[in-house]
Length: 195
Length: 268
Image (tube, rainbow over all chains, first blue to last red; front, side, top):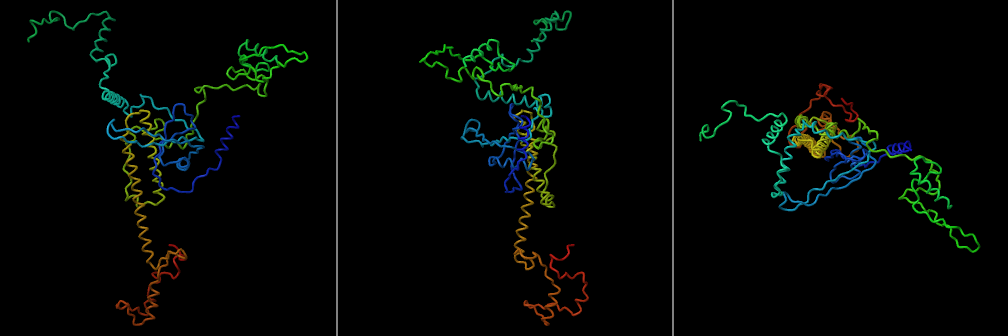
């Protein structure tokens, strides 16, 4: 069964591949190879191609420029909904985008995206904070009445320190002190503090 | 015929059969069982035989067929969960690797992306052949594809910063491509001018028959002209230089062009 399947794929791979006769010497297209969706099989590869590309073009391009053999090509266009800039002004139609999914003869598995700790070269921590701040800002602008509850906001830092200190005291059974001994342990407001 | 449903029903009570045997085909009880009516055999009795061949078979209850089939004894393969499948290894020479700037992170970090020089200048490329320019163009095309792939990956996987560096790199590549086009356009204009000149040039034959370039032999013609018209006066009124009889003999033979046409002459 398996041998029959492999022989079929081999036979398909050995088929003579016909290409067009029109030669293009200086193509100006930009093609992006896209990470597959989580459960997409490894014999499918997705590309973002120019709108004027057709299936035959991509097959020809991949074979001659990248030496990648393809058994089939599926194509679709992502047409964004009409929108306006910053939610106001004139309506316009954003440019559509063409994607093609090719069936590869040789499978290709993408590497896993690097973990957050491995993105130091990309300044990921700053990037993350900036993005978070930007999102919060956007949310505030979109709906100013939506004020987060106190339980949803991060605790102020002095409060966090106080809580930690209190826990320490409770745990060790030590009483609080201001580190002073003797008479100047306490300050009498009426005599010591000059207003 | 009527015994079949009975047997299947008995199997179902023993539980879902796993080992596939001759009598253990069905995995679930039959969905319906017609009442086993007593057969009337007397003369003129009504026909109460079960005419439904598929009675009791149900796809929903996975009863299987009532009759043994040729492949009933074949063990069925069991599906393997996706995470237990052996990992698929990618060919290290797969052509699609060329879309990646970095095989691990796909997109290069901005520090790596910023490591680039300037684009090729027009002056540098003027000295290059068409083959070189064409090869360089394809290097640029692939680099732009790599940058586009990295941009997409950086945005979608939220890798971090690096967009600005990638844009600068892209601008450099585009500068090179622009210079290539500039050089080729210059060459095209030069060719156009050359064609215009060649149309007027009597030494150049653009018809396609025979040699394209046939240089005139100045010395021979001048000598002939001098021999024919002794008091040579040019139509412009200027006196043509009188070639003295011994001049041809005293000339260095190396400077005289060969009488052969260009195509036959040995290429030096």
